[in-house]
Length: 449
Image 1 (cartoon, rainbow, N blue to C red):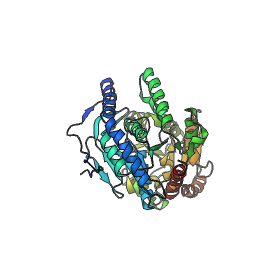
Image 2: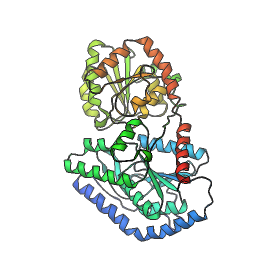
Image 3: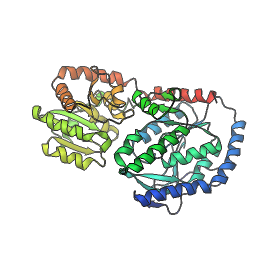
């Protein structure tokens, strides 16, 4: 049941939400309904601007109220999980923080804990997400956002996804209402566009769209130096970029969960060296490089096994490239204790992705006492301390990943040293440290308004 965020008239889910597959018609309709939603709510936004200002003037606050807005909260993905954890930590420390998103078409609009501060509002129209068949791009029912702000007059809004329908619609609404905004560079969206959009004209348009939208969204938070460089390349001044730490669940991911019988129970023979990959199976993860490296490494170490945890559009192709070896195993999605045991019960974590802004999986692996082998591009190579808790392969050298696998698999003493050091390194990435850093930034920006 949707618990209304409105103080005047409750936001209700439309009786019928049009949904189309991605394509020319679907995207065209997305733009049409987006502009229609904004046009129909312009009078309400102008009225809400006056009410919002009065509410702020009447408020006597010693710290800011903050809302985070994201498009894809109603699914399992890294941004959704991280945003929910951040909300929980901020609320646990008594801060007035909220998380606002949109419900997918097969789920009811609703509020969720902690403290009913997570709002999944109704949508008006949706289309399949490009490259992500289980996800959606949704045009939000803008009245729900207006009502949320009037009930909870936040001082600033942080956007977790950018240049996407919910983000842009609420950004425009925030600008009209006079709400301060900033955004979080969580996804290497430019690279994704180059991978998934087929038409060059579409790529050019979307890049210009992203640059324009993000420049108007205000300061930007980045999780790594690699992300900082990409944001600077988009034209942002260094003074508007803030690098803040991320956190992982150090209590859930722990070496104590190591149990080789875990794999026997899943019909994975315990007869060799276990490589583990955890993540989405999609083009941006550079899985072809992993497939080639694994096949080549087997020629020297036929006792290797590769366990793949996750799913996605590239699964069939990835399976076809390595399944014939008889040494590859696909588990699909794992979560909770099963995922934690998977990390702790492997011998080496391999992560070939070149597009991670941070990369939760390598840090979760380290928290589980699992040494990591990651690429030299993106956030993971900044989390790993080379020759201490893992190693980095050169993505430009064809055999670098293969050689890294063989080197580590052939040196048990080094792996044991890495295993102990990995947990120590991961303990720097706590939820509490991350939440504190974010709240300090919010407070600093609020005080300089």
